[in-house]
Structure formats: C-alpha cells, structure tokens
Length: 447
Image (cartoon, rainbow, N blue to C red; front, side, top):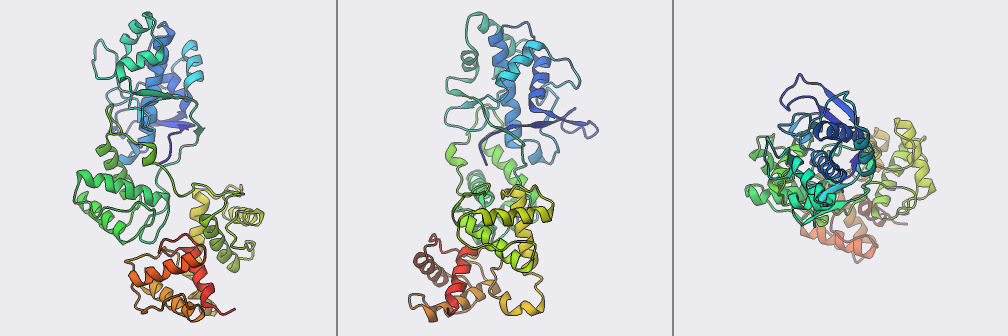
C-alpha cells in the first residue's frame, strides 16, 4: 500500500451496491464532494459546521477509495449514492456557492487518527432522525454556534486522537492490483504487500500459514501461504496471486484490520513503508536500475529498435533513451520513466524473448536469466543451470565453493550465492535475481 492520495476522479454507483441495473458515473473528486455536501447539509449553517461536515465527507469518500472497499468485492465503482451505505449524491444537482468555495479550499484535506495513515472512516448521521457513533450533522451547528472551530467540532465526535492531513497530493488513482499475476519467482513491492497482508490475516485465520518474511520475494513459503489462503476462501489453490486472489486478500485484510470502520486497528507508516521504488527515472541508482538495464540489454540484443545499454546501476541518458524507444514501440506514454505499465511491458517482452528463442541462439540461451527470482526451496532446470554456472565460476575463482548439480536450491546453493554477492558488491541476500545471475555468468566466463 502507498500513502493516500486525492483521486482526480471517483466513480459513483447510482443505487445500492447490489443493484446491477443502476448506472455508474465518473466525476472529478472535487465535484463529487461539492455535490455530496450540497445534498447532505444546509448552506445556511455556520461556516465552522459546514467545514466540519465536509471534512467528514471527504474522509469518508477517501476511505472507500483507499481501501478499495467496493472494488475488492468485485464491483466496478468506488462508492454508492445510497445513504444506507455511503453518502448522498444527486446527479445534475445545483451546487451552493458558499459550499463550492469551502470545498475548493479543503478538498485535499482529510481526517486521520494519530499514528495511522488511512483516511478515517468518518461515519456521520443527521443526529435527529438517525443516531450513530460518529458525527451528528445537526449537532455541529450547535457546536459552531458555541464558537468551536471545525477541528474542535470533529474532536467532539471522533475523539482527541484525530489529526487533519492538509494538502494531500492529487493524482490519477490506480487500482492496487499490479496488472500481472504474482507467482513463484516474482519480486516487487506488490509481493511484499501480499506477504504483510497474509501475515496479518493469519492472526485471525491461523490456517493461513506459514508466517512470512516480508522481503518482496515470492518464494516457496509465500506460495504455500497463498495456497492456504485460497483453500480457506474457496479460490483455486494454485499459489498464484491473480486479480481475484489479490482482491480477496485485500478484502479480508481490510476486514480484520477494520479499515472501513470508525474504530480501526489502522495502518501505521511502518505498515506501508517501501523497499522497492514505484518508478525509476533519470538519475536513479541501485539494484533495481541494474535489473532494468539487464532486461533492456537482452531486449535490445534481439531488437535493433531498442538501443543497447550498459549495466551500470545508474539511470543515465542512455538508459532513458532505451526506455523511450521501448515505450514508443509499445504505444506507451513516451516519458522515459519506468512506472507500472512500462515495467510490466518490459518484463512481458523479456519473457516472450527467452521462451521463444530460435535454434541458432541455443548456445547463449542457457546464459540468459530465466525471468524469475531463484531462492532457497525452488527446484527445476533453472536452478540446475545456476548450479552449473556457479561450478564453472568456481574453476576460475577459488573463493566460490563447488556444488552438487541436482536442480534443488538448498542451503549449499544459497551459501555459494551469498559468497558471490559479498565478493562482487551485490546486496547479500542469497537470492538470485538478474543482477546476481549476470554476475555469476561473467564469473563463469574466462576473460
């Protein structure tokens, strides 16, 4: 998960969630809040009351978007206009001028509990016909007339442990699903998200095992945890996190954390910190950049339209040029930035190449990274090739131990990988991604 953002647009279902005949409308988020506020409260109320109510309405809507409350349940909208579930929204209604001005001022501010990051599920009701545990809309009028500020009014209803987040970034909201299935050998922040969520779900559902090291590497333990989750929740137990499994995990995680409830266990900043970058661009450095360059180099070797790049670990002008060429070829936004769509397209192209090499390239096929991360517990021909190259490297460098070539990535293989990483200035993990694979191939080749 990332920090909350203010979405440019929000999709509203004009009916109850189960009403499949009701239409959806997609409107700018700021216009949605203006409409909701004009539908829910009176423009003649004191300004402090208006602002307190609008803060609650913003936070309520953002919680629905952030948790993907409806989308994680298979719906194609963010929120409904049914006041049984959400907030009133009347398509085409007039907007009150003073409410419009207030929303322009605070549409990107929202409520959080201290120490948490998700927008507060700011439950509210009119306070006359309907009572609830949250804010009383008519009650805010009395408090405003007493001279309380909007923040003081909100604390009366939601507690002293709330804060306001000001000027949150506004951008296009992307679905949390990464766009491609996650499976054994994947490595990304999305894998780390799944690992964290499965660990928390396992507290309430102990049959979801084993507990995972949230390192972003989709290893055999992660695969088994996914399978156990799928078995419990009646999904195909294939150990692959496709869209259905992704959103089922998210839905159950939201439920056990209470993220769509007024009183919530909540998410802390530590719960959503990142070790993988979401974008790579000019000037970036590190292992992720080196991995990108490896993929581009292989693609460029077989495709003359993609300029060759060197594996420097620095996102330089040559790397940007190769990215732009690739984006242009694939019909992507040609900005030279590697975001989700560009990365997915690069890995898809890479995998297509290595799985369909013509016979004349059979002599180099074995040296090309297999396209999945290899770690302890994995077995197969990819591991056998890895062990073979480690043994060839051991003939050139005495510090590298020889291995039994059995196709099983066990402790001995992991130890050899760690030694190679340490001696070649690669982050020591015992896990083989494209950077470590490339280093092993180079060590196996006599200069």
